[in-house]
Length: 349
Image (cartoon, rainbow, N blue to C red; front, side, top):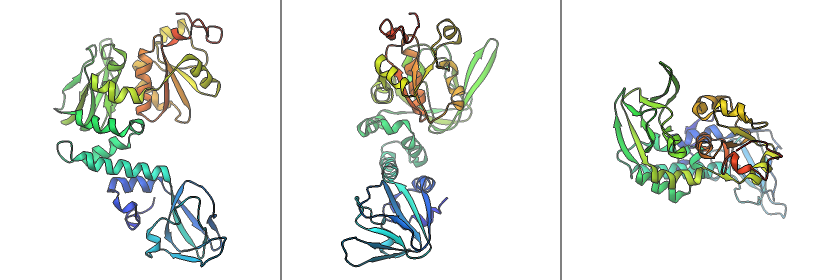
């Protein structure tokens, strides 16, 4: 990975925090050029931004004019190389050179995340840039409008918690959604006379959404493993600020069209329900074990969550979206597919 101290010398990157620079370095591709290698051609409309780390480049325009030589470490090299699109010049290596490349969208997202986090830190009690940056870097939050994010951080309520404290209990009704600002917690469920640990959560992780989305009682307990601080959001604010932008609904026709293009159904009903009325070609991941089962799910695909009515699958789609999966929910559940699509998708009400 590129030394982040080197990146601080470049315009645009010099405004990033330490966390932002680490993210930028991890997302950059390093290009090694030999004399005569072309970095980009005049007129190209690519989506990359280039920073010259070592060596020299020459920029030439086809219509003539003086060649522009850019040496690493110079004032000219402090800026991205010929950033405007379409490219105004052809860039050619004059010597052995190293160039760092990153996508325009990637860098713009990092700058937005970093600067928004720096601003929002002042709106919440105390200064905690690591927590803020983790939240703004969350895959799911990328789909939330900026206005919603601003409102979200104004509605979060801090809740100090102690080691061993049960924040939510299995079987209780849902009331709040929680984000961990400091500390770690365990997600556990009763199995007969025993208790099984399903997952451990850390800074930036959220919990409590399943009950809010499905309307069912809490399906697991969450207990603090150490003293910490949670930020909680009421159900009304959760519904308006998070559920609406994060849960993408598909009607039956759109869902089946997406399946025809290679997407997969994720059936989140219980194993007994799945055996009684199987969904052909689906992945069987019951909602009660979804957090644990996601470890084996490929991030390359598109997924449409299904259950009988759409309530549990809404919670599942939210969980998938939180973790960076491209997920949708079948609006109305399996019952919505009947009778119009019963031949294609033979399940009973």
